Figure 1 (spheres, rainbow over the protein chains, first blue to last red):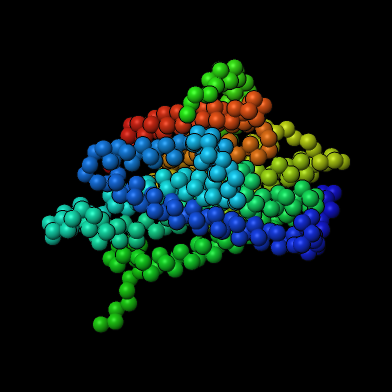
Figure 2 (figure 1 turned 120 degrees about the vertical axis):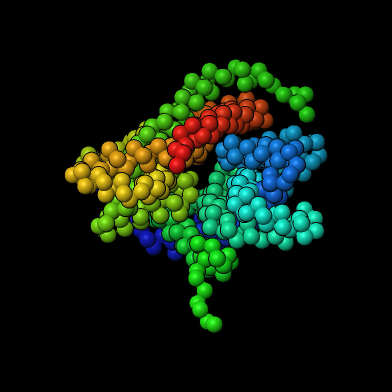
Length: 249
Length: 230
């Protein structure tokens, strides 16, 4: 392979004149994490809401939740990003559209919103699955004790459901981090975009992509281990997934 | 809101969008799925192998592919495939491969990791007694897998494999980052040439939605029909 490896490239100054290539990649990592975390908060809030209304006894709410999930699941993320970034400002009233276009860091906000809505459909499916996996008796017992429907969800159903669906939620969170790379198409300078820029400026293709790959793997491992700890803490005692408590008595 | 909406630009570009763009998208989806399932099944057999180096190798590959974004992998293979071609053929220069070949390699190898996990779950869903019975009948490992385990695993996992194919179909839109004329690429080129971003992107979203929605409905019906009542 006649390729000129040059690993010291990371310590050379990048064309912005201030940072080394390594620093620009780390800045990109920060943007990746910021985008993923903000989108995850949005996805968790919206997804929980939609997942809950799909399990309520009101048929029209259930239908609405289903339509929401289908809408955000059946359009590719890249197309959804273009819709939020290029199409939405044109469909709004002119003054509001212009304000959106001139917003500083517009690509960051757009990426967060697009990624948040896209992921919320997946979170909604998990939340619904978690709630329907509970025994019917839990809902009946909660209502029979005189809890209102919102109270039954807040005190009985959701606390159980979240603990059961933690493993699939972990993989959705990992997906958010990976999917944030799609935002490079609307100009967000996150990790993959920085690696691509480094490749274009320095022609050191494989060093740049290797560095980005390693950073993604490190993030992945850190999240996986962190969530495994949370899963152990939050496991529901008595279920197969829970560790058997040590006999202390 | 739709007062200056130009439907004509969609009509005019329909042949380009579907003959050039959608053909590329569907070809890529079909081939990457077919080869991806074969490679994924082999990977699954490797992961379940009792010989540790093979299972560790396969697990490492699958975990690597599953921890990086597809966009990054598209870039990786776009630059790597010419060098691999040079290495295989022994040519003096990195070999120029077309956009289609490059994306096909990327999607096949990337999705194989996901198909591997699906097939692994499918194989593990088969009762151990089936394997014991096959061995008792004197079947070799390839016979046991080929005649007994894999056909049942495939049947059990068919809905999941098809759902993954729908995801793959949506993911092919990411070849946009290499300026390839897939369906979204074609729509985007017309949009930028004619300054009709709103019309073209809404139309593209509609087409993706209809195809994904209808196929996922079909998968759901198939799931009910192929379910084995136990």
